[in-house]
Image: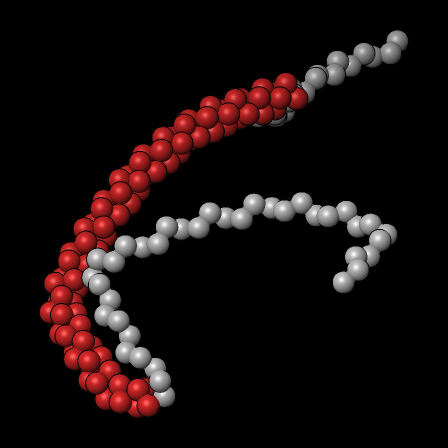
Length: 147
């Protein structure tokens, strides 16, 4: 008779839970977690963008108002400084015009040019002419007119 020997089974080595099902579930959890965090991040960034846009708009409006006020102040100062200069320039131009006319009048008189009439300050303007309407083109005929 043959002797029967019993073989013992060795216990399976632990695989640290790395089987296919566990890997699938870990991947699915990672996708879900990434989606949740991505949506949260998107919402946060969107809200920050809106807040930043509103603050930038307010700053731009304030700067625009300051620029308009500054331009108005500069314009007022320039006009105030230019008034006396303009008055002096007009008086000098009037004197020079009178002198030039007085000196040139004898020369122009020799050539038969009369002295221009003085302009009135409040002269009425001539009414504007109405635009001429389009004229229809004549049809060309084979005949020529005798001249």
